[in-house]
Image 1: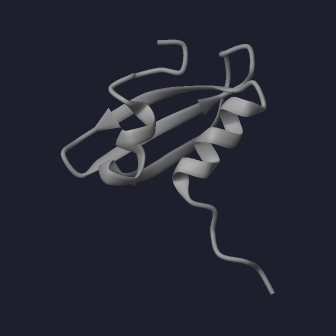
Image 2 (image 1 turned 60 degrees about the vertical axis):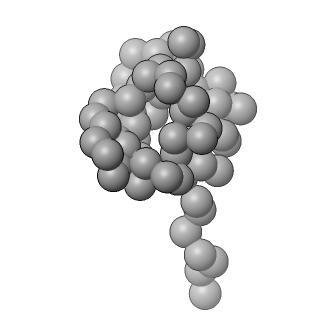
Length: 67
């Protein structure tokens, strides 16, 4: 039996905490797509799609983790 999928905000927080970088790839009024990149910022490892309301509070207007 598997648990519920991890909330997008938790995925992004965990990614940052482990040293990974992220960058907003697309944004609309309703959704955000964030690329999750390796710790050196080079290779995209995953893509996270969520509603704007889920991620906007964490993103706080930033377009990348090093903003």
